[in-house]
Amino acid sequence: MDYDDAVVGAGPNGLTAAAVLARAGRRVLVVDAAPTIGGGARTDSAFGAGTRRDVCSAVHPTGFVSPAFADLDLTAHGLRWLLPEYSLVHGYGPEHVLGLARDRGARDAELGREARAWERTVGWAGHAPGLVADVLNAPALPRRPVAAARFAAAAGLPTAALVRGAFRTPPVRTLFAAVAAHSARPLSAAGSAAPGLLLAALAGSGWPVARGGSQAITEALASVVRAHGGTIETDCPISGFEQLSRGARLFFDTSPRVLRAVMGERLPAWYRRRLDGFAYGPGTCKVDFLLSEPIPWRDARYAATATFHLARDVRQVVVTEAEVADGRIPVRPWVLGGEPTRIDPSRAPAGAHLAWAYCHVPAGCTEDMSAAITAEIERCAPGFRDVIVGQIVTTAAEQERYNANNIGGDIGCGATSLTQLMRRPVVSAVPQATPVPGVYLCSAATAPGGGVHGMSGYRAALHALAADRP
Ligand SMILES: Cc1cc2nc3c(=O)[nH]c(=O)nc-3n(C[C@H](O)[C@H](O)[C@H](O)COP(=O)(O)OP(=O)(O)OC[C@H]3O[C@@H](n4cnc5c(N)ncnc54)[C@H](O)[C@@H]3O)c2cc1C
Image (cartoon, rainbow, N blue to C red):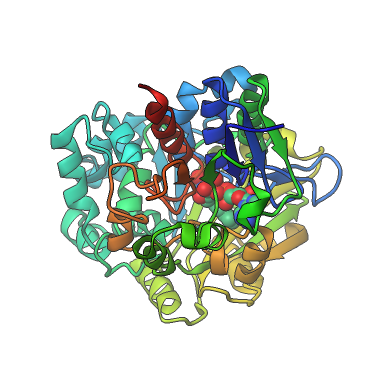
C-alpha cells in the first residue's frame, strides 16, 4: 500500500503527528525501530507480572496541559490523569521538607513569607490566560505577547541569578533550583531557568501520572491513529531513504542525526551543517526500585505526590550540574524521583511498591549511580535500603541503546542551552519544517523541546496540512 505520510518513530511526537494527519484523512504509516511503541512513554512489567514500571517518562505536567493532547481528546481514547495533591515534594533532610501544593492556598501556606515572591516570579505564569499554550507553541508568535515577553525575560536568566534575586530563604531557593535543574544545565548558564519556570508554573495545574503508566498516553495516541485508519509497525529501524514510501511526506520523530543520515544530500548543505552542529546534553542514570513497603519517609506529604526532589541545599544542585557539565561523575548528586504506586496503586500487586530515581551524569557515562542515588534517598528516608526488593539500573549509555533519540543518555534529545532554546534546530516560526518541502523533523530536538506533550509532532502535522490547502 502507498501512504501519503510516513512517520519515522512512534514516540509521543511521532504518534501525535500521525494522529493529526490520519484524522485529516491522510493515509499514514508509522514505523519504529523498537519492538514496542511509545519511545520515551513506555511502561513494562520488568519487575514481574502485575507490575507497571515506567521505563522513561513518569510524570506529565506538560502532557496534562498540552494543546495537542487536548485537541486529540485522549481521554476519549482511554487516558486517565491522576493528579496528586502535591505537584512536588522537596526533601532537604529526614525532617525538613517543602511541598509544592496544587492548591494555591495550600501552596502559599507552605511557602510562607516567600509566597508572594513565588507568585510574582513563577506562579503568575501558570494562570496567565493562554501563556502556557504560547510557551508550548514557541517559537510561533505568541497570542499573549506581553505575558510571553515577561516570561521570556525571566527564562533567559541563569537559575543562580534568578533564585538569588527572587527568593530570600535557602529552602525556597533550593526548591526552585532543583526544578530548573531538570534542564541538566549549569545553574550559572543563561537560560537555565527556562524549563524551571514552566515546570514550577505548572505546579498549579498539577504534575500528574497516567493511570496504568505512561504507556497509557502512547496507547491513547495510537488509538487515534488506528481509529482513523493509520498503520503502525514496530521492529523497523530506518537507516536509508530507500526504505521509505516513495512520494510520501516524511516526518522524523528522530534525532537530527537520523534525519541527516537518511536524507543525506537531499538536504541543503547549510541545513546539514546545522544538524551536524546540533548539541546534545548530558546523560541520566536511572534506577527503578521494587519495594516491599513504600519509601519510609517521615513526612506525610510524600504520600500525596508523584515526584520528589532531594537536595540538602542549592550548593548540592549547583555542584552536581557543574560536575556533569565538566564531564565528571557527580560525587553526591541531587536526585529526582517518584513513587507512582502512591498515586496509582494499580501498578503493583498487593504488597509490592514501585519507585524510581535518577541523577544527571556526563554524556555517554557507563557508571552505575545506584549507590549514590540510594544513599541520597536513605539520607532523607532512613530505612529505605531495608525495603528494596529489586532494582534495575539504566546507565546513560544504556539510555541510548534503548532509544536512539537519547544520544549519550540525553533524555531531551538536545541540550537546552540558551542558543538551542531559540534555535531548535533552526530559527523559524515552524522549526519542524526542513528546507525540503514535505520533510519534517518533529521530535523533541525541535521546539518546544523535551517532554511528553506531542507539540513538535502536532505543529509539524498542522503545518503539513496547511500546505495542502489551496
Ligand atoms: C529516563 C527518562 C525520564 C523521562 N522523564 C520524563 C517525565 O517524567 N516527563 C516528561 O514529560 N518527559 C520525560 N522524559 C522525556 C520524554 O520521554 C521525551 O522528551 C519524549 O518522549 C520525547 O518524545 P519524542 O516523540 O520526541 O521522542 P521519543 O519518545 O524519544 O521517541 C522517538 C522514537 O523514535 C524511534 N526511532 C529513533 N530512531 C529511529 C529510526 N532510525 N528508525 C525508526 N525509529 C526510530 C525510537 O525508537 C523512539 O520510539 C524522560 C525521558 C527519559 C529517557
